[in-house]
Image (cartoon, rainbow, N blue to C red):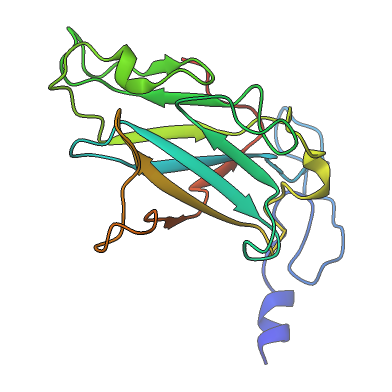
Length: 187
């Protein structure tokens, strides 16, 4: 029943719902064929919630649920070369600047806390755009379709990392890309 319904639907962008290519009817002033391409973004966009007194972060990614790491960055210092990212883009806002709406770019391995206008500034979120300049070939693992790829982050400040209630371990937070882009944002 459903297949009959789908076959009766018009075609969009040169394809019908039965998976067969079709040429849409000509429109005034236009050709007849519409080329459709998939917009496959290869850059993940991570939105990390910091807030309170937290200004910095550490991000790790794995394709085997953290038995080993495939990616690692720390906003305050250089990351391990074997799994680090030499061109990660990090953006934040500073509520104590003349225009708190502006996205500010953080330098690689430069603590965000050292870039704030005031010791009272609050960084609610950072946006992280991993690059393709990673210690491991990004094409082997950095993909929206990689079902094994998982990300976690920890919040940091000028003193150290957020800890569990006993103070014995870092507190890690699961995070997923909010989107995948063809190009990274560059305000």
